[in-house]
Image (cartoon, rainbow, N blue to C red; front, top):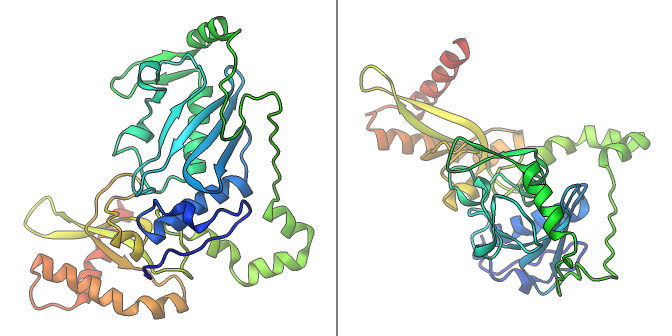
Length: 324
């Protein structure tokens, strides 16, 4: 990976200097991808505003029926997406999970709990979950098995906040009388159906597979990086034998080198095993497969065995699980 910070360009002309706070170039790319996704593929009732000169902070606008339009501030840590963004509520909202005494801190497990957050979440995915968070009829609390009925809180909100002026943001102009927002979207699927030639190209060159088969952290496809899965060793109930196991979440070698060691569901793994997702990709990862399996053999002291032995254990475990 080159040391120089790369320059990424998309619709809002964000400069390369604006992402200098991110420590790793691959993480810079991921942040820009997340921002671009919300801009080019907008979601109803969600808007994101970023500044050209600094994207360490962004304005998130959520609109729900009971609360109306709400302004939230998003702060990205230097190791985003390995760590979750910090999001606070700026608008005056009556909600059991918003702490007014803590500068609008939002108590949500996807933002506060290490086991609930995963780098597989995109910024758009987090925003959608927050939209549901404020739209739900009731909400379970992080530190207990009880629920709050949100209708009562919304009634208090409407009663107490009816005459309050809206929060005004100097960065995105939210709350000002001339605040206007527009959205333009284009569906790739509809475009392909409208022009058969485009649909043929999409099928012929596996555009959909290339777009969807990506590692869950950096969101890179098999043309951009080496893809594989995280694997671990689980002890068999009887005896001292270990089985090679995996959650089969797609993870890249770059993800693994950045320290990603948990699956999307939070299951830990210690090793990375490349996958032959295409002939071209297999040519890139063939040598890595042998070195990865050899590393597992050496770590577990399997003795004088080939890497095929570890692969056999892995496949055997898969067959046993599928037969249950």
